Each structure stands twice: as C-alpha cells, then as structure tokens.
Length: 214
Image (cartoon, rainbow, N blue to C red):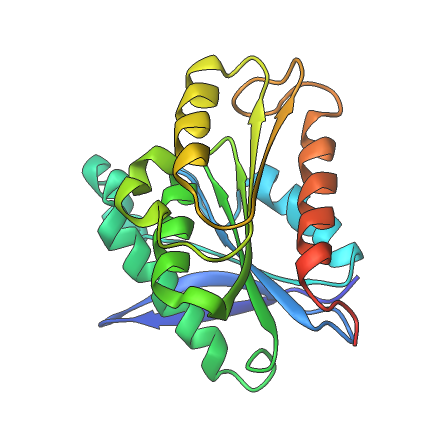
C-alpha cells in the first residue's frame, strides 16, 4: 500500500487539511467530497479509498471546511461554497508535480455528491468519472444536465427517500449513467458487506473509464 501524505490545500487565505495517497504506477486520482458533518477522516470514505488504492488508483481525501467553518451548521449545506473548495482542490492537484499528469475523478457521499456534480459540470471533460454513495444529487439540480463525466449513483435499498431523489436526478442526467441499489442497505451502508459492495462498484466504474496502471 502506498504511503499516506498529509497535505495542506490553499484556498483563498486558508489551508484545508488533506490526505493524499498515490500508489506506484498510478495513472488516476479519485478526489473525495465528504458529506455534511464529516471530514477527510470519514471511516466509510477511507474504507472505499483503501479499495481504490488496491486497484491502482490514487486518492485525495480532504476537509471541505476548516474546523471553525464547520461549527456553522449552514456551511455544511452551502453547495456553492463547498463546490468552490472542491474546484480549488482539483486545481491544486493539477499544479502538483506528482499528480499533474493523473486523470481525475470524483467520489461524492451524501451532500458531497451535489458538490462533486457541480464541480464536474464546471470542469467538463477534465473529470473522467463520478461515483456517488448515498448521495443528494438533487441539491445540484441546476448542474446535473451539464455533467459530461460518466456517473454512477449508488443507493441503499432501505434508503427510500434518497432512492427517489436519485431516480429523479438520474432522469435529468445527459451523461452516461447508472443507478445501483444495494438491497438491504440503509443510508450509511452499515450492514455487513454493504460498504464492500459500494467500494467494489466504485472501483469497477472508475476502472472502466480510467486508464489504470500505465
């Protein structure tokens, strides 16, 4: 397994904490956008990241907000603010010698899905693929139709309200798309094997569109 590197991502006049991991020979990097109230240390996202790393992809998990900003509840749902942070992190990646050449994709969770879709819409073909776990794509309604990156939406079978929100967003998507519902899983995919299913589906989706391990 590649060594984790603690990084500081400059955004405006502040720096956001991140964890960058690049396996030897990686040709692609998945940037994670966590959900409200979470962070770069999200155990679920880190679990998925571990599977992607084993599949030969780099990962970047970072905080969308500073600790002080996260104390303001409304900030957690400020999609334009958070989208700006993800876009800044993406540009930072583009400017780093070790990651500049890597293809980029997004993995969004919960509200982070809306952030990932908004950023993907703005970056166009620069983002190779997007995966959502228990996401809220409905919060990116104005951007959905502009996303060109192939997008996979993964939802728990017991997460009924979010299923309906994802189905509506799915119908609005013009890019290549797929909706996967994991039977018996709830919103956080805490059931035995559920998160493993998410990671497997994510890895398969990214491998389909990334050129992995040049």
